[in-house]
Structure formats: structure tokens, C-alpha cells
Length: 388
Ligand SMILES: Cc1cc2nc3c(=O)[nH]c(=O)nc-3n(C[C@H](O)[C@H](O)[C@H](O)COP(=O)(O)OP(=O)(O)OC[C@H]3O[C@@H](n4cnc5c(N)ncnc54)[C@H](O)[C@@H]3O)c2cc1C
Image 1 (cartoon, rainbow, N blue to C red):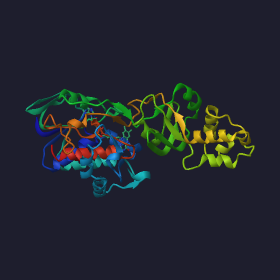
Image 2: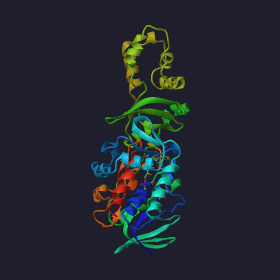
Image 3: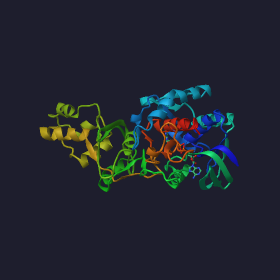
Image 4: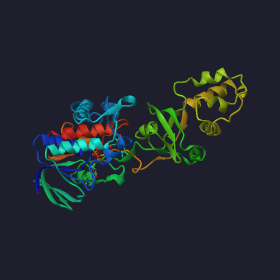
């Protein structure tokens, strides 16, 4: 069967690319090996889909080519996606730091994208296993449901995270097959695992959450940190996991916004135990474990001025060296991907293989937590859709 555009991947970027190409009158076919359209959109944001952020800029993305995102982000703003939701009567709200979520279910976003695709006659072939891709004048895709020929081929297969939802490395293999480079791939926006020593002391705190500031190499994130039975999770940890390199440590400020030294000095003559005082600001179980790992809790009048200073420093800068990050089945996204130095930033098209496009997470573009990954999928899918 011949068509104008073949898109592999019925996810966020593939759907956006399809509907934009369809609006231009292109004949579009989407192939996906799973039975469901937009599976990751559906589970995103805990089922409420943090679909974008009011403030999106290139600073919110990691890539070996940091300027790459500028053109696509300038052409597809958060307001564009919000306008689509308005048109479809889908209510949403803002949470902290500009994050926009659906009021009801993320399914509404999938339904909207599918309805927009259907309006411009995009065809879907689901449960379609791809066995070979080649270029023979046209692009040829051999599948379990027949052979398809297209003028343009869009590889919108996403990253490696959540293989249970259909993630595969196909996009990277296609890039390599056509002589393009792929940067190293790592799980990102993922929990971090404690070292064995820390696990013994802090593993039993599983379930405790604190508002803290995580700092690493000049970056800092103030959000919740959650103790798990394997290590640390929560938004601040997921953020830092994208930057963290094995063998290095980050710091945790357990009392952000409070001058711990002044707070301790106020009580320096008191017989109150350190743990009791810290319990005014932190969960008692955390304080107990933290004191065990750092400074034994004694009456405050037994610490020297130097010790109080050291305690304050540790509370604001608890140094943690994780053993590792959790793998792709717990990661929200993949760090790294198809090297953008071989891709047009305006068209998402390979600069060496005309007609071959790579929008979305398959590229070496990774957003911070907060709606930036889906926004990249919309913006890059839209950019590709204007040219395919
Ligand atoms: C649990 C979770 C929560 C998330 N929450 C958010 C959030 O709230 N906000 C946010 O911005 N981002 C979030 N993300 C990230 C976001 O979902 C992705 O970055 C985004 O969906 C990427 O879009 P994409 O089109 O590149 O890939 P995807 O949406 O992953 O789509 C890829 C498609 O390609 C198909 N495919 C893969 N391999 C093959 C193959 N071999 N043959 C055929 N088809 C194939 C897949 O089945 C899938 O349908 C979350 C991710 C996860 C895992």
C-alpha cells in the first residue's frame, strides 16, 4: 500500500505530527505494535497528564546540542496546546511551577488527538509488528500487516522507559541503519538507589516524605523527597536523576528556608535533646535515623559551638552518594537518543537522509519534570508535521 507519510508510533509526537500533516492534506498512516493509542499519555501525570508547562524554554531540556530545541519550541507554544483543549472543552488546572494538568482523565487528551487525526483522515494500523525498514526511492516498511510505501517516514517511537507500555529500541536501530549517530542512553526522571550503608540506616524510612532542596553541580530543585525501601524518589530526586553521574554525590537540604544554625543557637543552653528539637520541623523517624548516621542526639547544652555549626551544615547539606539509578521500567524518560547534530532543528528531518524524520523522545532531547517532555513531543511532532 502506498501513502504520503508513514509514522511509526501512535504516541504523543506521532499523533501531533499526523494531525498537522493531515491538515496540510497529506495522506497519513500510523503504525504501532501495541493495541492502544497513546499509552504513555494515558498514564502520564499519574493519569491526569501534565501536558505542558506555562513556562517552556530551552533551559528546561538536556541535550548534547542545547540550542536544538529553540526553533520547535518557538513555533509551538503552551498556548497552542491549551487552545486545542479549550476547543474540545477539556478542563485543566495549574499546579506548582506552571505545571498544567487535566482536571479529569488523561484519556481526554488521547481522545482529542485521535478525533483531530480522524478529522483529517489519518489511518491507524495497530498491533502491527515492524520487521524491516528500507529506502528504495520511497520508504518501504515491512510489517505483520503488509508492506507499506511512503514518501516520508516519521520515526516517533519514543524512548526506552516503561517497556510494559510498548517502548522498544526500534527508533535507535532505524537511525543507526541509516548511518546516523545515537548518543548514550540512560534512564532519567527515575528514583535513585541508596548505597548498602545508607540503605541499612535509611531504608526503614520507606514512605516518609519531606520538602527539601536537592543540589547538584550548580543546579537545585526544591520539591518533595520520598524515602523508599530502596532509596530516594519524589519530584526533587527524579529531577536530579537526569543530571546525576555515577560516583558523584548530591546534597539534600532538609531545612530549606530555615537558618538551622540560628535555630540551634537559640536552644544551645537547653537540656532538650537534638532529636526532639529537630522533630519540630522533620518527621521523628527521619530525625532518629539521621542522628544515628550523623550526630548522636544529646541534650543541646552538651554540644560545643563548633559541633552546632557542623550539625547545621549537615542539615543544610546532607551529602548522599547513591549507588545507582533505577532502570528503564521505573524511569519516566530516556536521557540521550538520536544525535540532534544530524537532524534539522526546524523540520526534525535527518540532514543525511531526506524524508526521514525523528520527532519526540527518540531524539537526544530530555525535558525536566513538569510537563516539558510532553511539550517537546507536541512541539517536535508539530514541526515535523509541517514538512513531511
Ligand atoms: C509513567 C510516566 C509518566 C509520565 N508523565 C509525564 C507527564 O506528566 N508530563 C510529561 O511531560 N511527560 C511525562 N512522561 C513522559 C512522556 O510521556 C513522554 O516523553 C512522551 O510520551 C514521549 O512521546 P513520544 O511520542 O516521543 O513517545 P511515546 O509517547 O512513548 O510513543 C511512542 C509510540 O511508539 C510505539 N512504538 C515503540 N516501539 C515500536 C515498534 N517497535 N513498533 C511499533 N511501534 C512502536 C509505542 O507503542 C508508542 O505508542 C511520562 C512518562 C511515563 C513513562
